Image 1 (cartoon, rainbow, N blue to C red):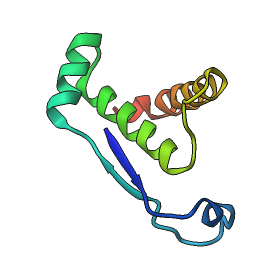
Image 2: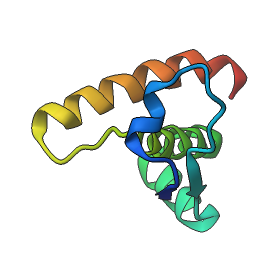
Image 3: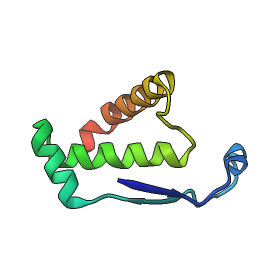
Image 4: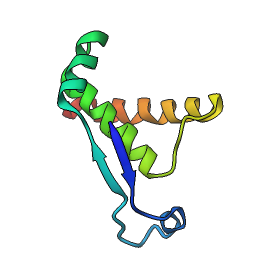
Amino acid sequence: MLSFPLADPGDLEDRGRELFLGEIYISVDTARAQARAARRPYRREVAHLAIHGLLHLLGYDHATAAARRRMTAIESRLLREAAPML
């Protein structure tokens, strides 16, 4: 998964403004391989990669242990909420 932010971080503060955050690219082959290796459904893996990329576009990162815990917690919550659709 690659994400390319196109918005400036300051633009994210105006919640009423429409904003193009950027682009997320997911390799179908890599997602399939990762899903197979982790023994989880392909759809869930793609959803996880999309959520991970979206969080990066929103300014989250996992450069430190604390940031990684925070990002992982948000990913987990969003995946649980998305589960009925997967």
